[in-house]
Structure formats: structure tokens, C-alpha cells
Length: 488
Image (cartoon, rainbow, N blue to C red):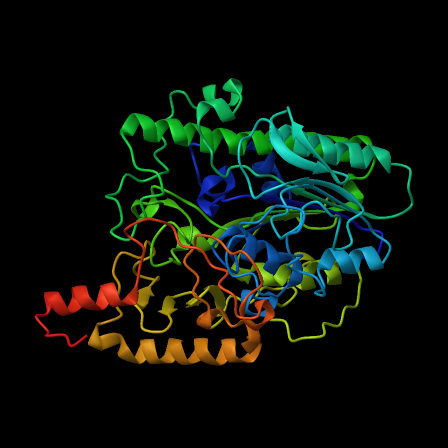
């Protein structure tokens, strides 16, 4: 591809792979995104790098794992003195900017200091925080903090369209990031247009299981009656349809401007989401200990480029968000040499007609603080530093992760094999100065730089929930059940 290929990157917030029609959901109304998948390529097995907002987003843009970029939890800072967490690190947007692209961000940043334009962007309409009310959202527009009166999904779309119109006659290629805060909470009726909620007034949401609450569920996540449950699901699904409606407007504008055939479109979400799955309403930090459920780490990804990428493709290999940076840069013909070893591999060849690698031995990795995951097509192993609890699932026979085989003697060979591969892989890429395995990440937010970069300061917060995990509590419960006398 030549360097004049434009890029539209659409990123949603807390959207599980299961929540789109093209992925088999029969409750959701998502005609635009379903058509995008039909006319382009859909990735059946794509994974975030960390199942929570900020580290997942940092990994998308840098191509680094959290133990390389230092963002280990969602960032609970939004004032003007906030740390610029990616300062000194390359992002693919910065590289695009250095190669002649005009870059715009509309929506959620959540990577520190939203007040200042950074990382190669020249147009900047950014949420002050990581999310919040869908009306009167605090937004930085070209450095000025405003209260946005519009529904924030529509406002995010409109700013993107203004950018396209503003530079419609420019010879410069563009990069447009549309980062919707949807379908992240809040989901109450006061936060979403009635017209969207009414689309689901009679929906029973059979795609969202009714399961007993998970024993690790933290009390900060939703718990309520069936009526209350249906109400929040209307908000969640209505928010997705709101995004779908916005994406259609942007595609229509690209077509009107004669730019559609010159524009690569990528749609994905920062991380997955459980809306009743596994008995929780949350993502990786919806439980304590932090979880790596498929529904938390698996995300939708659709890639389209009219008349360049063949339509109707469904790729079933394993892919990760850390593959996005090398893919985008190769697709537009930019030769980038990273100063550090990056874990991702470009899947550009697959997009342009090459054969994908569906071998069983292909693996993907995730990390969330001291919790790490290795997954291939048949097995998933989750390791929690320093002492567990650990998990092993045979996905080939147990895709819903109901039976933890970690203590089954028959599978100890698999535990050893998967752990060894996990350890070797992370040793290859981890920066020991900010190693997540040594960071006390609880899922309640990060304030400040990690590890040595933060001079050893305490930067991770705890929820007040009485269900917050400590290894000692787990060991005490185990010893009580097994009648083992403890000496503390």
C-alpha cells in the first residue's frame, strides 16, 4: 500500500466480542458494523493485552505489553498536572505524524494529561477522565475544558466529521481516532437517548446469561433484580447501537468526500466485558482476584478497506492488540525500527490475501499487574504471582471455562508446559524496572508511574470491598477446609 492510505481507527470501551451481530449476537442492533464485517475481514479470536482500559489502550498504541510501557491499571488522574504516561515512548500515531499524516483524536484518551495534545495528534477533542455521564461530559477541546451538552457518542462522531470536512481538500493523508466512551457504564436511562433505549424495550437479552454471582465478584459491580438487570442491559445495548449509528455517519461522510476507497478502517474495543457472563458485570477488575475470562480478554476486531481487502473474510487464528501497531505501519508502507523488542507481528499479509497461521501452537499473552495468561487454541493457563490461585482450562472441551483443572494430577504436565512457556516469553519482553509481576495491582486504579519509574511510591489503589483478594485469605480458607493447623 502507498503512504497516502488514510486510516480510520474506531475504538469502543468495554465491548465484548459477543456483543455484535456479526459475532452471532441476536439481541443487538448493529447493522453498520455488521456490514463493515461483511465487506471486510472479521477476526474471530482477537485479544486485548490487558483486560482493563488504560493498560489495554497503551498497548494498542505502543505495541508494548504493560511491563514495557508501565501502565498497569486504569488511570485515576485527570487534572492538568497529571503524568504523561507514554512520554518518551513511540506510538504508531506519533510515527504516522512523523511520516506526513495529519492526526486527530476524538473521544477517550485515558492515558494521562488529557489537557495537552500529545503523541503526534494535531486535533484533540478528548474526555477529561476515563468516562462518566453521557450528557455534559467534561471534554478538552483544543486545550479548553468544556461541558459537552450533546450525547457524548454523537459529539465524538461530530468532531470526527468536522475534522474530515476541514481537511477534505488537503493532500496530506489523515489518521482519525474515534474513541467512543460507549458502551462503558453508566447505563441508566438518564444517560442515553430514549430512542436508543426504546429499540430494546421488549428485548429479553438472551445473549447475556443469568448465572449465580461469582464468588470472586466485588460488591462495587452491579447486583440487582431482573427488572434492574434488564434496565442496565438496555443502556449497554443502546450505547452500542448509538456507536453503530455514528460509524455510519462517518462512513457516509468519507463516501461523500470521495475518501472511502482511500481509507483503511479498523474497528475494535479496548477490552472485553461480562454482562452477566461468569456471574459478574465487569471486566478484568470485576472480580478479586483479577480475572482473565475469555469474555474479559476477547474483543471484536473488524478491518475493512474498500476494493483493497476482500470482503466476507473470517480469520480464525489467534491475534492480539499488540499486533496492531506493526500491521498499520506496514500497511501504509512505513518502515519502523523499534528501540526495544516488541511482541507483536504484522498481520498485513493476511489482510492482503496471504494464508493465516491456524496452527494449534500459536499463542497469545495477557497481563494485568501480577496476573498473567498464556492461551493457545486448546488451552489457557493463568498464573497469579506470587502464590496463586492459578487456573488451567481445556478450551477445546470447556470453552466457557467452567472446570479449573489446575489441581488435576492428570494435567500437571500441561501446567508445567504452559507455565514454562509463559515465564520464558515474559522474560524476553519485560522491563524489570516496571515488571507487573512485582506491582501490587488491585484493579482500583493507578496514580503515578510504576516501579522504579515512580521512585517506589505507592501508586495503586484498593476498592473498599470486603471481597478484595489477598493470598493470605485464600490460604486460610484452604487450610480451614482441609483442617491444616496454621502457624502465623
